[in-house]
Every structure is written in C-alpha cells, then in structure tokens.
Length: 343
Image 1 (tube, helix red, strand yellow):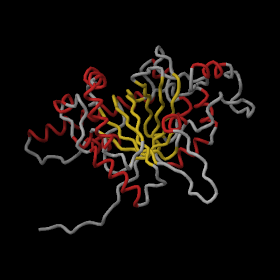
Image 2 (cartoon, helix red, strand yellow):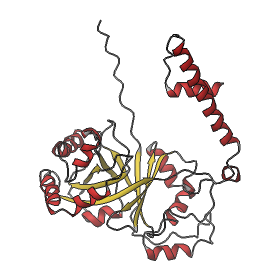
Image 3 (tube, helix red, strand yellow):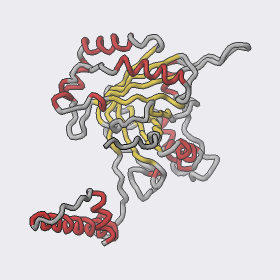
Image 4 (cartoon, one colour):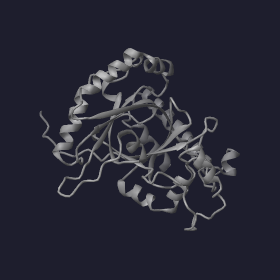
C-alpha cells in the first residue's frame, strides 16, 4: 500500500553564526573576563540564547583567534549587539597586542559608565555574520578546517534567484573536490556529503575589507557597488581524531596548493578574488563555578546521579523482559530519560 504524500514541511532555519577575531597569546588557552560570571568560560554570554560557542585559532598565526557564536535567530544577535554584555564581550577580546594593553587600563571603569570607551578599532563592525547557504544538514563547525572565501560582485540576498544561481554554481564546482591528504578521511569513513560547509557573509567586518578591499562610493547616477562573500569550509576532523599531520602535509605540498588554485579558477567568474586560511576550532566548555560543583555534590549533581540510576534501572528491567519473552519495549534513549525523570 502506497502511503499518501504528506504536506511539505520546510526545513527549519539554521543558526546564525558570528565570527569575532581577536588577539589571544599562545600561552593563554581561553579569554579572561574582567567581571566574574557564573560560567567562567562563557562570561558575558552566560544565559544568552546561544546554541554553541567556539574558539578558533589560526594555524599559521596561533595568536590570531576568533570567537564563534551560533545564535538561534538573527534577532537574538541584534539584541545582544545593543546590550552592555556586548560591550564587555568586545572589551575583553582585544584586536591586537597593543589594544590589549589599552583594554587592561580600562578594567577599573564601570561597564555601565557611558564614558568608558572601547579600545580603538578600525571602525568596521567586529562581527562577521555568516548564514548557511542551505538548510540541508551539515556537520558542526569544529576541528581543523580550511576556509576559502570568494568575492562575487553582486548585490544578492538568500531569497532571490540570483543567490541560488551563484551559490549553486560555486557548490557544483567544489562538489567533487578533495584536497591532498583526503585519503585519511576516506579511511575513517567520512561521508562526501558532510566534509564541507557553505556559508555566505550577511554582514562584513574589517577582515573582509582587509582581504578584498573597501567598496568605492558610487557616483551620482551609478548603481551602488556591492559584493557577496561566499565561504567554502572544508572539515578535516572526524570528532574522535585530529589529522594534524595529514592536514599540515597537505598545506605544505605545492601540488596540493596548485589543486586548490585550479579548482578556484573554475569559479572565476562569477568570483573575482579568493583567499584561504587554516583554522583549528574547538568548542567552548560550559562550566559554572560554584562550591557545590567543586565538591562534587549539590542539587545539580544529585539530579544527574538520580537520572543515571533510574536509567540503569530502566535498562535492567528491559533486559529482564527480554529474557522472559515479553514484548520488546520500543523506546528510544530520549524517551527513556523522560520516563525516568517522571519517576
């Protein structure tokens, strides 16, 4: 019997991604917040509507870092951008070693004091805002990655046909591309569908101007000059292992570089320029510092231990039913947890 086709349901929006570059000394693992927060790593981002937090270091320049935030909605980011938390966030992420010294001299000032200036910057927004070019499932943005950005002279948004035309043209040329050293991923079962992510820049930062130049002001009667920045991110990592040697060998191989250049030439036009960087991205741990957690006890720990105990009890009951030839319970792990929580 053929089931009737269900009503089409559009895929949900994927999270918005912001990328904030900053200076982080090589011997410093995480940013340090000048104000104490419940979450010592998330700092001013604690309890904000963030899906994931990531910290990236440029492989070729380890003191160049980036704070990556995945937001549930664009409005969530806009609310943060106009909040005191954003002021604190940027003040503690200096753009350079020089601005770090300037920032440290402002630590004694109250964040609510409007006279407390931010460290000097280029004047451009420090948030590079990314949006996924597709709603199809992809892997998370983490591990060793090769970021290749393309500049396309066009004024587009993701709702018009021009965007689909350009994005699909670039994606098609890279669909079968595998950089030198990809055999490592093949041996570890990497799916071709989940080895890259395509993003496009919704809002530019100073890095875009540095790499692709400043857009000239239009003359009277001329169309406003504009560009679209689309990024191909190749994912080297497989979660349980980091192919540092393989990725490093590929980056140092002249033939591998030539293969990237040949592939990039296939998308020019519509692209007119491209740049490439190597990054190592790790997830920011979420940790709430409190005396109860340091001692390994307290309400949260007790609740977690109770959940584990009930889950083990549920599994034991399931095994006993199997041995007694009872019907198999069709229950997923998440459903089991819900049952256990209800007690």
